[in-house]
Image (cartoon, rainbow, N blue to C red):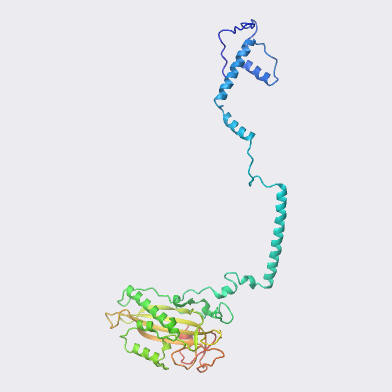
Length: 418
């Protein structure tokens, strides 16, 4: 604070001395201000000897400076401190929240309720654990990937790319087949369904045919397999019209022989050599799923020809066509077939059609010695139209060897499982 400036003339009010007594030292402004502060606080040293006129003058000027500072809002942060002070002097009622918390009585009541809830949960868990210990299936059967759900939906096998080196292992689940689970107890549980199992090899230009031509021929080969072995109408004993339309009419004797076999099947000319058909008066499919496993390859054959070789096993779950029996029997059919894609520049063929080069079939759990154009599942408690099997015992799911693993025998094989 700067030193207060003194007026040139003394105060001329009556009854007051007109100046400073001689011989006494005058007080500085700082000393006078300190004296006034100490006097206001009720302490301090004794009063200095100062003329009353000067004291009144200094006091008045100090008061005027403080009033001017108050009118300007107060610098040095005073205004901010005053603001906070005013809010602190009259606080608003705080709403209940996470900072305030409930009263101690309410807290105690909540703790009591919490203890009761936890006790109830503990009793429930103890009962549940006891039930699981006695009957684990109550829980395991309801966990995805375990129990009966796992048996109904086992992990699928990866696609087959060639003949396997090992025989198939045990089935994913045990027990008899049912209408709900027609492949239970069979390695086919892990096989792909229907047409999705027939995967095409990579197409490439061969024998003068472009890559696009080979790709189209591979699609035609798949269409033939599906039409001959998975078409619902054909499986119910119908005529395989779509499959016949894919075969080349220019192949000598092919279509005429096939159509004759459908009208008058014989041992040497039976339509089941190419088509899967069941007698509608005897059997029907159990559900709408056929399990399939196998592979397809493509290679160059004679000049101007591409060979498409397909080796697939089809598993058909069936039930009796009439009556209330729900016993499921599976018929397994292994097909080995070679189709030809021919270059029209070299061969007299119909573009977009397939020629049949070779085919072989093995059927299991099928009546022996019957050549009427149908497969006949062996249903228990039902008379069989065929004769007993006399061939070697084979596993119809073993795909390591040639067609059906029967060593090329023409005898009706005995199966180790279905």
